[in-house]
Image (cartoon, rainbow, N blue to C red):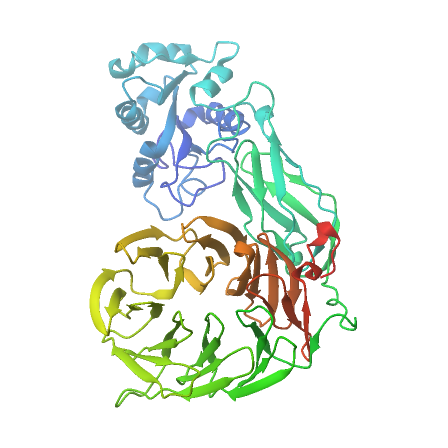
Length: 593
């Protein structure tokens, strides 16, 4: 084949369809002379009707003209030089004219150089019996396929690794979806494929993608899943908007798509009844947080914090000066620190203490970097400026424990000292105010907590587990993307990345629960080893995630007790305390939302 102005011209991806560049992988490169265009086009069309071993449509490079083949403005020879080595097979159409064209000869010799010793990459096709005598000696040992044979196209198809189109996998939804609720995660959706007998199974790297029709239904979650044992399972699908009728559609390269029967997406219903006599309702607005006992509540309304005892009576109050930045639970007490350096310490009986920590001399900011309770419910506060203070409810003045020159990102208290993670990403152990062993972690540290005999530090990129007794440090990559939010405490830690993928893991770094939520969401409460989780969305609404599925969404704040026996839900004016089971199990269980 020769370029325009020299008897031929480049084209790619089929007649009239140019690819974005030659850098892509081609399945077949057709080398031919301009006079043999009709035969080349027939071959192109026949191979285009096939599928690859992965079930996809083959990419076939067929030069036609400078305008419909090689991209406009591209140098045709450079484009050919890129396309040839990136083609799995080169089919050369042997004719008497073919061997008279310099460009065809160049393509043939390039294909021969790329042909491995065992052959298979260069596939000669003899379209003119008279051309056999003109085959150059260098390629004469490579057997050609004559078009005079009855089933020559089948031979070519087999030689280039393509399959008849009838072998396309047909997708099927194995899960019946009858309804959905806005914001609630669907039960796992399974898509399988039926493959004609005698054809290859799904490729190792096969994937299936789901979408919704109409697109205005705003399907969210992990929309592309790998095929494992002939099934692709989607575990976190949800809808953002209500619709009278939608369908799920499954597609995969080279496969016949499938769709579900139409079903409605309902708006969330009203929360559980507030008027039943046996359920406590607090006349309180704002964000609720349970004390460690799982009964008393602290409620932050604006900048006012009020303690509600186990009998749901309002007790002590305190005022923050700025937005809350950090929360922490001890054995009995609860603490919150704002961005100004004010710290409020409270117990479940209503005793409350607010303290403004002094800034370092000349410092403009006094931002708390971390809170940590000691074994005796002494609260330790580490500031970005580097000072670590201790505070208790007994009325004494805050005590300066130490100065960490690198500033404080994370903090943990032990019976014999403190662990301080600095703004330089180094973890330092202090005993009696003196610095000891150091461990280099990573620049951005988000949280630290004592979980059984280990200390877990969650960084943006890795999880770090320290055995304080032996000084052994284990570092593993995050099971999700770069972490943006975390909730440490108890027996596990919950983390969420920027895309909304999250997991709950234990001290052994084993993932207990995986989930997918709204980008920008952050965990605010967890219980039952991560099987119950409350997330706060960027718009201020809250969601209850049960076993990795969102089953309840509220426009107002919500939280869980540490033991998972109670949930506190707001309607904007009051707080209702109910068992989490009353907050719905999702559409499949017919629960209220």
